[in-house]
Amino acid sequence: MDLTTFLIQCLNALQYGLLLFLVASGLTLIFGIMGVINLAHGSFYMIGAYMAYALAPIVGGTFGGGFFATLLVGLVLAVLLGYVLEWAFFSYLYERDHLQQVLMTYGLILVFEELRSLLVGDDVHGVQAPEFLAGTLPLGELMTYPVYRLFISGVCLVLALAMYFVFTRTRLGMMIRAGSSNREMVLSLGIDIKFLYRVVFAAGVAIAVLAGMIAAPVSSVYPGMGNTVLIICFVVVVIGGIGSIRGALLAALLIGVVDTFGKVLLPQASGVLVYVLMALILLWKPDGLFKAG
Amino acid sequence: MKTSKFFFVAAAFLLLALWPLMAGQYGVDLVTKIMVFAIFALSLELLVGSTGLVCFGQAAFFGIGAYATVLLTPQDGAPSLLWLLPACVLAAAFYALLVGALSLRTKGVYFIMVTLAFAQMAYYVVHDTPLGGGTDGIYLMAKPVLGTLLAIGIELYRVHARGAMAALVYAPIILPDIVMAITTLALYVTIHLPLGRTSIVLAHIVFQTSFVALVVRGRLQGFPAGVIEAARDLGASQLQTLRRVILPLLAPGIVTAALIAFALSIDDFVITYFTAGAGASTLPLRIYSMVKRGVTPDVNALSTLLLLVTVAAVLAAGRVRRPARATEIIG
Image (cartoon, rainbow over all chains, first blue to last red; front, top):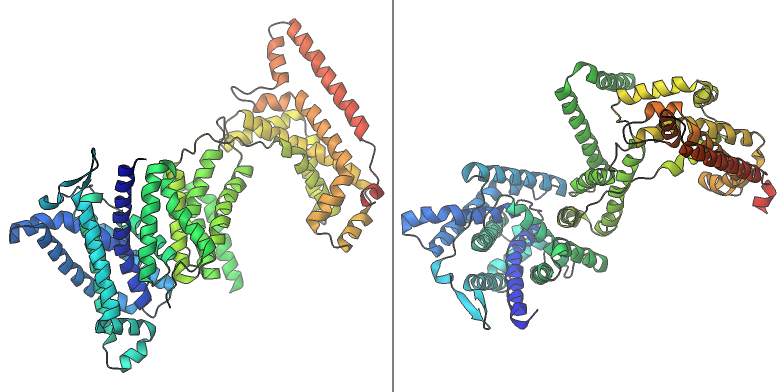
């Protein structure tokens, strides 16, 4: 492998890892703060990707189009969806045991998949990257690298930093962190914890939807894409440690590297490598690399 | 309450047993599928219901069982469920052992995620790697041991209806060969077992088992029963007693039985003739078909060789018949 290929694969690994982090962070956020294991999180990613495919012509017709307009509409819809879901389903799950949470959210997966099949169909679709991001950067003499992948990495990095900032530097972040460690105490201090949870959940959904929307031009849009992402996100969360954003970032990057270079160096075993990595981490540190709390 | 429950279960089983007589192909298939998934659901119930472990990777074990069945089925003829079933169960159990050792290091919600992830790993293993070339099962070697265990069971342990069991075991010896052959063939036709090497092997196992049991049981008649009690007293488990005390004492008998079984098997004609299918044949069958077209030098040579092998087997049997003394094993 020469230097240019190595560099390209590094960029790919970074992009995949950051994207995974974006989805996994929503998962770990919802679990870490509300104690709900959300199997339907992969479905939000899938919904995002299908939104990128289906919303673009609609938004183009009404607002004159534009990639960012589609993203914005998608995000608004995602926040609404998250808010409604939390109000209708998830707010009843906080006090239940894991089995009930798993059954409920697994049911949601089936509902979302069936809705997807009814509304959009079961075909695989490609999504065009926006024109101003469709170009390529020259790398070395022969190789080029698509600008859009750099854009994905950039968006993910910005979001990660924003999340870090919100959690550690703002009053909202402080209230959320307090709510995760002692619900009753926060409630007695006059903070509307129900509303707070609803906001966090909506934010988690919005992040997953956004990840799906910006990933759609790279990964294409296909049925069942949510479940694949969900399982990899579980691996991320298991390796990183539950509820730890920092751990999720590190684990996502680790998986990005292992998966990308596995596909280049050991194509036959690439599917298994990520899970082998998880098995090794479990042997070494059963609680993940960074255990929260 | 308890009796009504019992009657319900009994009625359900009776109904299931009678179902193939009433239903057509579709109905039988449907109920079979329902039963399969009922067993699968039961496995999940064992885990979630009894141990409280919410396992999300249960489907992987289902899949491994299915893949193992296909991979372990030999190229020629149908395999026997007798070994195929345990083998597939073991394959899935082995994966469960590996995955379980890792998954159980985690708790609660972690466990759910990890089991799901490992199930996905199993998917990738069978999906991405070339798992071709089935493995042929070799179960001829198990023949004498199966008979030995039966004789030990009848003679040394209290078995219900010992007399009836002995009669059942020795039936193939008492019955004329032709009856055995025709009934075996009728059974094969009823259960749709294709005739071939498998069917010959199964038929031979059935009637050889009786001879082996007879010989080994004869040896057990003069068996020092105190030795077993002594071994149990000294803390040997049931299995240890069998392996370290009973089997060594019986070894000459088992070897003799194996040689007799070999001799009987190699010259059996009637049962083999009825249970053989296209493409599978034994030496006597081959000789018979050769003789039909006249006695050639090949037949003479083959018969001589067969005689030599049999004489050698008998001589070898005579050498190992000297009984081992109990003290030799203990001391």
